[in-house]
Length: 308
Image (cartoon, rainbow, N blue to C red; front, side, top):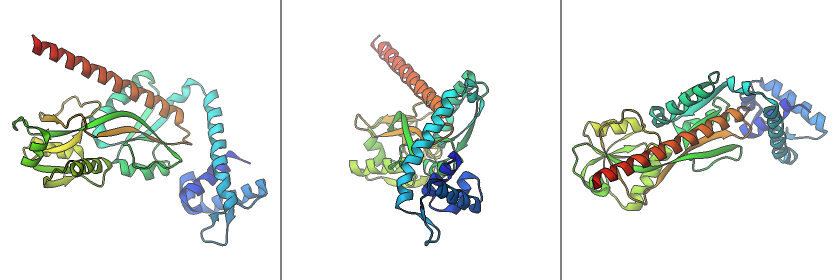
């Protein structure tokens, strides 16, 4: 029994058909069918119901999938255990939401390049909901995403930062609580098809705040720019790693009960790049913690300066 056939079997289970699995494992549909027939001969069992079109896993096939995944993980762990540090000279394809491209992503990629100069990190900008199918197809090794409402069993989500929602208002707007600003100014909404947009909408509904919606846009950068040009106010997450040149806007906290956008890495559990993903995750945790300490130090210094 070959590892390659087990990988193909798991791909068929996850993708639902021989044809879709063929794309995931870079084989022809005929080759996938041949591999599955050979696997059945090796095991001396029937794994598929071929009376249906396309063929589907039978009860024996479904029962084998968890054990196949376990065998693949063990095999990949074995490879990683004997691999040298030169493994970090490969390429990691990382999806990243546009909001993270001005702070979190450049900081972590720069740090990785300093530590592992031969490691190539290829960044693909995409919204969180767009990354799921790309991870499924193996087009991405991992992705920085908002915590999904549901994580499939074959994917792993590891959070590394909390970003509380805050209100952005024009620089010359009055010093009022967030609720009053939301009720007074036109509201520039972040796309409700995105997970952050749904989080914002849930909070407004929970608080019973009626907004005068002006427009709905699909990037946090675009809603922030609209506020900069004095067109209204918006709600966005407070970035865990701020950009080097933030827009001159008023940033109003929503209070201690403000909801958090959770940022994390989403990765296939059977990813062959899991070691590289682990290194990326460790660095993300490190830079977020360093920024938190830095922000706390600055706030303490500001409070001391006010007392004097």
